[in-house]
Image (cartoon, rainbow, N blue to C red):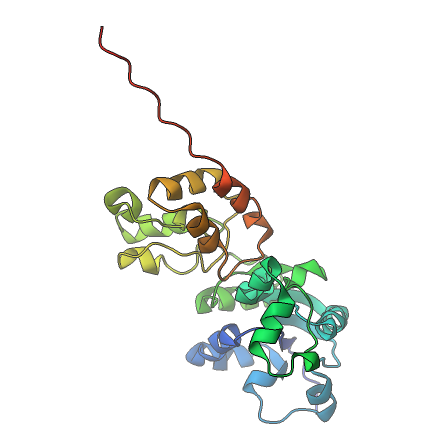
Length: 280
């Protein structure tokens, strides 16, 4: 029997809701042809049984040509596992807001994790966790980051196909505003004064929320070089308070380093409007 020459694919889970892994399973019709080109060798979400060593360690043996990593780093064991996975992976791609920006669990980064632990668990002394939830790229080199909460299935298939073909993924870096224009959606901020994070949010969702009269709330994380100072000014103009502005950025992508200056910008006093000249 000839050895299987297909490149190997592994999918890994850290702290997350599994939504991004389910996006791959939801590909359905596209997933079957994909298995003709790639050998999925580690993916607990789609497996009923697996090698006992891999099931016990959740770390795999490798090597793997492409690893997709879902979830953020929240425990000391996570740190050990991600370094092991990086060593046995030729290419490593992070998928989703948890893996690329710490996820919603990164709200702990701005509070006292001991208070959270005591409030949630009956026996908090048995819970081993870090004080922060951090993206995978904080700990190991990453070859590509695919944003979203959850990720877009079309973009995921493009990433897998690109790495199998040895090319760079064709994932646009523009903002949600660009997608609104392509859909022919009228800007809800200009037309209705609705606060919207579209100008600073990475495209990928198809601008769904603005298309249905709701402001973008940033589930795909920051676009490349977002103009946060101008965005904060616009949100303040649309009636949001300092507290509201900080909170709207601290959701799915709370630990994004790009969002770091938001609190400082939101705390700045709004400039006084220019005084009108008295008639002569």
